[in-house]
Image 1: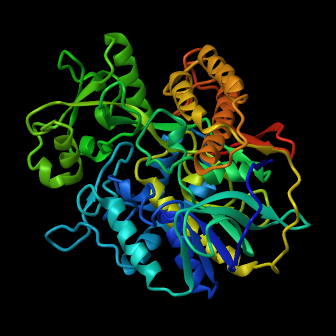
Image 2 (image 1 turned 135 degrees about the vertical axis):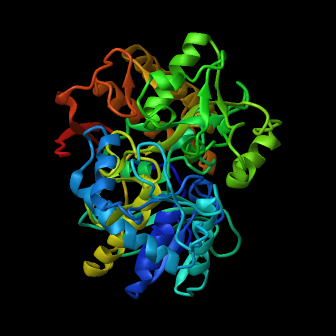
Image 3 (image 1 turned 45 degrees about the vertical axis):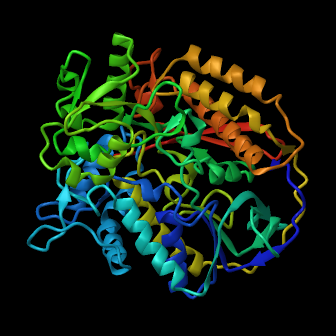
Length: 537
């Protein structure tokens, strides 16, 4: 399949095309340069407007005294609910500390103790203090700052901003040899063009905009995953959408990106309260407010259903120095009329992180030659059914390095693109809110056969809203539509509750479902489903 789009009117070329400018994309570009490869770095908006800069939590790595990669591995496997690929997790936790040191060498400045040692904190699911922070709750912003500075200092990295990636280009052997892009710019690179490369790396971040409420920025429309699907690549674990349990509730009519109240706040001792002032998480899990995110999100949704309220409360009034420890969160609350040092904070779950994505191996290779994926766009198997807090930035660091090394070791001869004669699809941009509202209602935190089928029926009706007027909004809506299809299909197939996938009609975890659901589209747009057994111990 392909998106309905005009023929390319300009062209560009590099050894490697990296699509996305979060921690995964920026690090891949920098690592590729260490091998002397030329890089075309493409980003959808400004270079610093992806999800990474919004990361309030931190980066998890076994750097502290008494900690070890093996302990980090164990915590990750527990959170992943027996669906992690243990070898992928082992790569993550063993190569993680060195990847963090490399990030520090590139200029990232992390918070330190008075002794000068890097300050390490805890977050939900971690049994050790192993989370690095920068600026208290501004870790992502500091990581972005350091990596962008390194990118801008290298003249061999060409940066193209305001460029939406459309589809993959393939050579006569079916290998990816470039992409088509739409650039909102001036001069020679304006409109649709084609960029050629010996390898393409998708690092476009998440797909949170599939849902009505999300912590993801507006650019997070899953463009890389949708491109990979249309290119015939396999995707996996897309049913496992992590909903962050504590997102600032701004009112029932608000949609799009919502302010995140970091898990680190609960790590510092904040309480979740119901309308009666009771700490309801104490009776739900031994770790109470520090239970894994899926446990907390489900408990909050249950409490909301029980009380008929649209949110619960987060109490930080007893935390000394909150405004200094969490300046970004404090400012966000104040901007929305809430003084967290004196008032309770209304919070509810919102779409936060996609544990699944384009299926890749330990070197970031997809099932289509020449195409790689990294970060939230990828399914490396490290997150399983539920990502452990602060493992996402680490994944971007570790696997981007592996991708660059693999590309350098196996760089092919540049192929020439052949014409893509597969069917074209374009959903009208007016369908976007319908997709988001339907997905939130039927495929959100709590799912059932009835709710998923209703949403599937909605998508069938939405599919009739075709458009013949290509534009950025219609391309994004089409991507969201195809991702919604994939999520729904996998969520219906998985008849159990596991990790961040909760089925009301199948509330138990079943050993029969200790397997990965793989999906792909054939050239005519027909869906195919396969399964992969998972050995996680």
